[in-house]
Amino acid sequence: MNDPQPNNSQPNNPLHGVTLKAMVEYLVDEYGWERLGERIRIDCFTYDPSINSSLKFLRKTEWARAKVERLYLDSISYDERKGKRPPEATETPAKPGSVWDQARRRDSNED
Image (cartoon, rainbow, N blue to C red):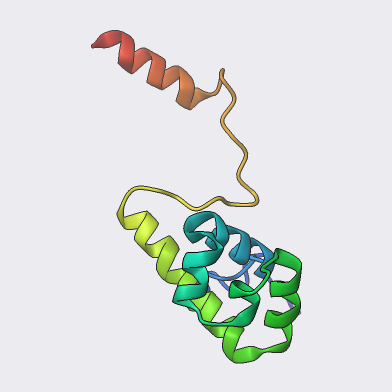
């Protein structure tokens, strides 16, 4: 009997579940269009850049998409080393009354 595949079928793929749009938006937030165009020299980042025009080009151009994916991976890896975390689509902010907030308040009151 065949078991259905688990939802997390690519646990070792850091790009699994990350859309191209999310990668481009993250990189633009991190670097801005000018610095992004300096790091990855493609016209969609340097001449009249927009998310939509970049996505259109990147979806058609394998080598450019590979460069964007590489820079994204390098950037989130750097952020993790520096203690910053990239935005995650599935993550929701903690509620004020969550267990973690209660623990933080308790710890700060003990000091």
